[in-house]
Image (cartoon, rainbow over the protein chains, first blue to last red):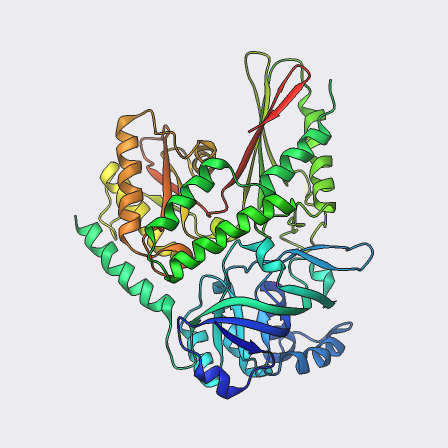
Length: 206
Length: 290
């Protein structure tokens, strides 16, 4: 198990290969469907005017995301009334929904990686080679266990997106993941899809 | 009429935090099939650790506490209006207690209601009057990742060479499993409905998932197809989380419906490994859970 601290250097990211188990420590941000669409529309493609506290949040996010990580996660959070936030359950959500946005978000903010489940497609894989970045796979559904790696909730942006879609700034310690897409064009998901596709073709021919 | 709000709250807590014994048993058997040191085995070991910890902490097995699907079977004398209110009150309370994530998002305006109640349509509640003295409430929590990989086929399907028979059903179900890859949190459980109209067929493909994993289908034809689909799905080698491995599907449940002469739908609901379903039974003063 490689232990890696966030922010992550280019050199460290390039040294990672598909199949490597990693324990991540540092500060990361959750972001999923609404957050990715908001980032793309407002700051990257600029098809939407910034509104309310958008620009302020953008400035606050930039240093956190540089060399950092976005976690595809919609957590269960306690302490919503008292604002003494705590992650109760926090496994990954399916990443493929961010496929249209992810590579552009990685490039714009100079992200070193994303954490999710189920893998991503060719556009993100190409983005990982260019940035450089990797895709870290967490175990889907292992929510109570993963929440134990979240030592502190440092804050939250865009809570008006709702608890699952908000961008939670969290401190993690030895957060367990596996590299399934690396910065050299390797993807476990592409390999499994190709191999299972061959078996499917044989089964359909029967 | 007795107020069941607290008992329903307990049903929700159990469903969200405590995986049913038949599902856990099946996952434990799956671990042994994966090679020591493989990513697939690691994934299943992590899954089982999480199952134990969630039970101990009364915390959600998965942060996506899913669509709450209630099936209420009641003898004469109960008010479905009151039962519905009690279910809704219990669900809002369960959300406050962090047994449930606020999951009801207005699809037009984008607002999360914050308490899992949305209009009259969220949660989904089905009521059915039954003979006898017992009232039962079954709850299934179905996460969004696995819901997204569900599929419906209209046969014949030329692309797959699938005709209007069980051989055709087999082909389209296998393709649905291939397309899902690891994205529905494999290893999954397949709920398959043959026939019906598009709407009733999707419901039926979820209802069939209330069956226990170790119970075989009373119809020998369907029992054979269930077994075959599970085995052939596993031959594809997609494996836990899509990491590659021996177990892609833990079980298959099929139900046959009636259809219009013109229609032949095959509908697949993919259930993730976090196959959360529980039942409470009310007999007189006694309430039991299974």
